[in-house]
Image (cartoon, rainbow, N blue to C red):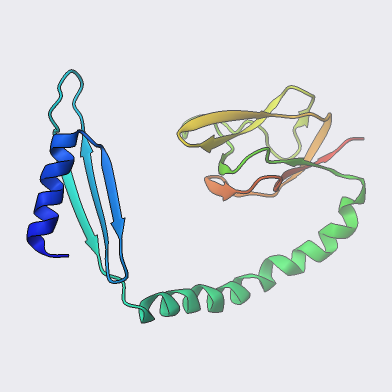
Length: 168
């Protein structure tokens, strides 16, 4: 794509009032974003980002995490084996959605639930942020929190265990 074509595309996006346009081809990816100020029809800011990705680069990037993952995996695996024996009577509180796990309502507040706390159904145990919405996760079980399985400010998957609770 030529520079004049990109400039024409930017002008077209500005006139059309579109907030974002993304074009991806073999040798590049182009994203044009504009923000509309409140009460006006003109755009306030325009961001142009061009990224060229050679074919060999993704292979190198993928190779590094794959090599790093087995190094990190054995350390948590060793404690997990003894814990698996103890967890037969424990109940898992699982994530009902994909998002970011937070143990506190805000950085300056205390955690919703700590190891050793006794919880009952309806108690908030954490917050999961998904798409800028903070969702309070409430316990559906009664018992004592034995273990927090996820680090604060970490991404979580749907149905991922967050806490282990001893119901006795």
